[in-house]
Amino acid sequence: NEAAMKCPHSPSYNQNFASLKYDEMDAIQTDEDAYGFLIAIIAVIAISAVFAVITIAVARYVSRRRHNRWMSTLTRAQKLDLEELQTNEKKREKGLNSRMKSLVRSAEVPLFIRLFIPVVILGNIALFLSGHLSIGGTVNISGSFA
Image (cartoon, rainbow, N blue to C red; front, side, top):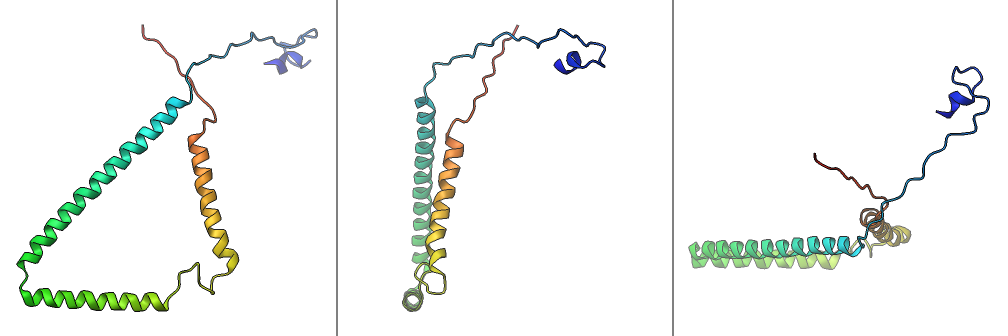
């Protein structure tokens, strides 16, 4: 600690003390390129996408099979009642859709908010990606076993 050597009240005070000298430390140069990390990210995304597609396909297959099995247990009258319920539901949804507006097209939401919210969301996505995908610093740990 240099402070003790520069302070006249310290027992380790040295009047001729200039400063401590440290040996220069050589930084470890790595030959890794950034493409390896990018390839790893793309591989993880691709594997995740394939897993998601397989999961969705299996879920649809099981759901369709169960639905067909359930439909085979219904009588003709039950199937007609079900069709009528579905028709009424579609008419009700169509009526709601014709009377309602989305928030983006609604006059009750100010124009500034309608335009600013998508910009904020895209900005958050950009900050998240830049913070998690860029290499801000690295820690190289090396060790050896005896």
